Amino acid sequence: MIQTKGLTKYYGDLAALVDLDLTINAGDIFGFIGPNGAGKTTTMRILATLLEPSRGSAFIDGLDVTKKGKQVRRRVGYMPDFIGVYDDLKVFEYLEFFAAAFDIERKKRKGIVDGVLELTDLQSKRGTTVDSLSRGMQQRLSLARVLIHDPKVLILDEPASGLDPRARIEIRELLRELKRMGKTIMISSHILSELEEISDHVGIIEHGRLVFSGTLEEIRCRLGIQSKVRVCVADQDHQDRALELLSALPQINDVEIADEHIAVTFNDGQNGDGIIARTLVQGNIDIISLVPEQIKLDDAFLQLTKGIVH
Ligand SMILES: Nc1ncnc2c1ncn2[C@@H]1O[C@H](COP(=O)(O)OP(=O)(O)OP(=O)(O)O)[C@@H](O)[C@H]1O
Ligand SMILES: [Mg+2]
Image 1 (cartoon, rainbow, N blue to C red):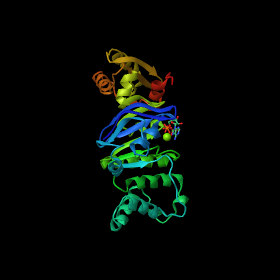
Image 2: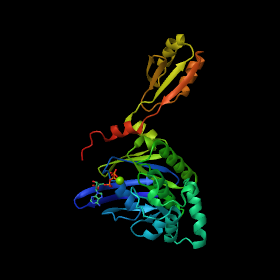
Image 3: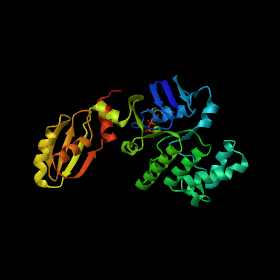
Image 4: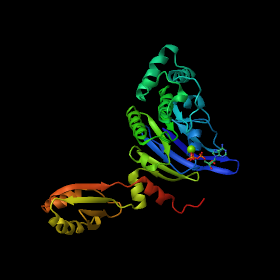
């Protein structure tokens, strides 16, 4: 649904984006991750037809963004990192303005505006002026705005920045809902753990270059991040026996007793709590809990970008 080939952007002498090749499948949530100045906004603005690339090409739904601008804009909802706020404009007026800009028939506008207000849980703010909304509500309004013309593709530049934890969770829920509606979503952030739960794929960008693109599982394999599981057994006296049984498994790299639980580390690329459960049950050891430790994107990100020199 979204593709870039050798996408490059110079601002004067500064190479903000260098030979970016990205493919984002229809219906996926793609997390675009990178530190300040990495080139995220530049990429998104090119995809949204707001910026010309210096070299390379980009396609939305098979349409070249530099040649089919109008058709691309019909398919894309772009939420910029900063919202232009109009004084004295009420929430519904703001949305109706954009509905008009997208040539939505006058008689259909109210229904559509009500629909996006409901989706973003802003009905109660319908008559409030935009500049008096809190930051979180403005972010939601901005999201409501990009949904007005029912685009297939959403390009959201840091939609969760400046939000409190509760509002972040709400945005995440909303993105899941939009995915269920069949949208393809590209979302940027520096807050890596925020995208970990919702992204099907992630792309990590630094100094305008894609450092990694793939699933979290692929990050794990590429980095050889070892999967870890914490096991609690019912009877403390069984811990030594459990250690012995698990140590004998070829998939497992290390087993140690740490206070109340047993910490199991798999070999590179291996994981799974099933094998642990089977082994212990067959050894007549009752298990209270088996908790896999999630790899954190933050750790992965630090490892992937470590030592990269511009
Ligand atoms: N209009 C511009 N003129 C000159 N340089 C620019 C312009 N816009 C961006 N840049 C530069 O291009 C590089 C990439 O910027 P970009 O805004 O794409 O990064 P970003 O990943 O979105 O960063 P942030 O996380 O801070 O939003 C930076 O070095 C930035 O200073
Ligand atoms: Mg940016």
